Length: 112
Image 1 (cartoon, rainbow, N blue to C red):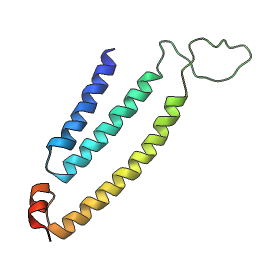
Image 2 (image 1 turned 30 degrees about the horizontal axis):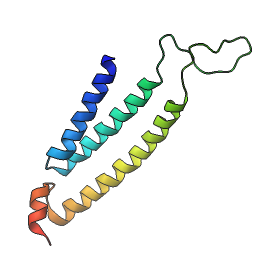
Image 3 (image 1 turned 45 degrees about the vertical axis):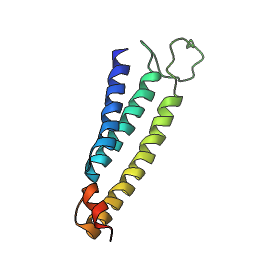
């Protein structure tokens, strides 16, 4: 149960970085932390004590098998998160080229 709480704390830390920070790079890091917290929660939801891999065997019993669906979802989420992060970094670089700063408050003041 404490591992779920730690995942929630990591999620809250990411949300805090997204909402309260004024630097674009710190906001991107907050988004990354939030994505990994959600991935960690999905992996933890599939965990079983003394679980085993869901490999078909005629001799094996179907007890304590780990659910493979969250693992597949997390794999897909990692790829999508990487593409999203690359897009965010590219946008941040273009903003820096145009305005010369990563600070959101200064970018709002410039308007040009």
